Image (cartoon, rainbow, N blue to C red):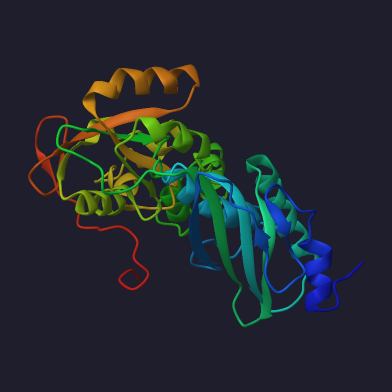
Length: 325
């Protein structure tokens, strides 16, 4: 049945049974949530704009997945277990087909990670805008933070970097790619995989962590500033997918998309050197992709080096809403 009003829209597409810890969910002025004893609440909010955070031709289900995935990535970076979400949705009008696809994508990921939608808002406006707040739980005192890196720590990242950035370059016609590569890269842009289980596992191993949303260099610099340290990065160890390599062979700077492209939603974290073996064994046992890419140094700043020892300079600082075109 077509949704004829704001309240019809909410009832048809965004009302679900209460989940764990939900005393009162969608349908009242506020949600009532129960925080278990000994736990802290981790909260993060992201806004996605059509044409900025996802291309105009993105399938509705993919938009639903990505809207939740970017928030879950923030929870992962803190080592928090996902619990609840609120959603504010601004639409030019009611499109039942789009809403059905969006809600199906959103709730498919929500079920996978145990997330209950507990409230939100719907409004009409000229541009599609999606604001999502996620709530997670972490044992008191065990949250991962950005300010714990120390001299001698090793720097790791999960997954591969730059794939989403390359997908955008292909869409803009800036580079060309064969269909298999273009299709795979586009999926990394549309459906990032939040590293939630990895973040939880890192509570007892990592000294600092951050998720990579604006580009490795930009986000790693945030971590370094918070920890008052510097770092050495080895470019040869930055993980690049086979699809990435196939599309960047002719570029003058093949590292740039991986270092400053953004939209990766992988984790970047530091680990004391004495925990290296335990970390790598854990990730290998669970078949989680992991790469050691550098080390923390006392001298402030981030220094990047080619395999032959030459210094690498990247003139891009990563994505910034108010500095980027």
